[in-house]
Length: 115
Ligand SMILES: CC(C)(COP(=O)(O)OP(=O)(O)OC[C@H]1O[C@@H](n2cnc3c(N)ncnc32)[C@H](O)[C@@H]1OP(=O)(O)O)[C@@H](O)C(=O)NCCC(=O)NCCS
Image (cartoon, rainbow, N blue to C red):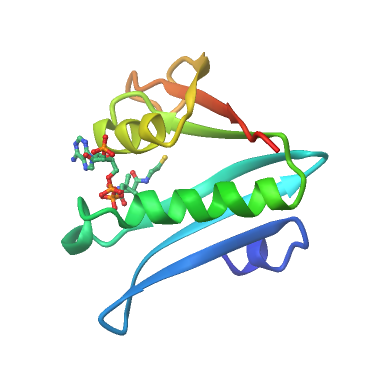
């Protein structure tokens, strides 16, 4: 995490509820494209919209910086993450077979970032 955050191409946000950090998103931005590197919400706060807010913050930051497309990778068997990304406007753009081992594929997803 520290290594990623020290790169000039990486940005991120921490969500805070009741004075406690409860989630984060990390993304990269280079060459007019952006990528979600990691996003997570603490278990006790999941399902209350925090992931949606974090994803929107990353999308808006990348758009404001001039990126025209955003990408991510997600485990094909992760319904919560898939729902988050679909609701955020991401659509499947490819598949990497057995990427996570044990027969779990990675789904590549992307969305345009309209000006
Ligand atoms: C994925 C994750 C970040 C979502 O964060 P969250 O704060 O719970 O998400 P939200 O409350 O904003 O919900 C976003 C959407 O996902 C749906 N969702 C949330 N949890 C769900 C679940 N367990 N199953 C199915 N859908 C779910 C919500 O209904 C919502 O969809 P909607 O807008 O159509 O109603 C969170 O579950 C998490 O931290 N998971 C572990 C880490 C992880 O898998 N990260 C992604 C790696 S690619």
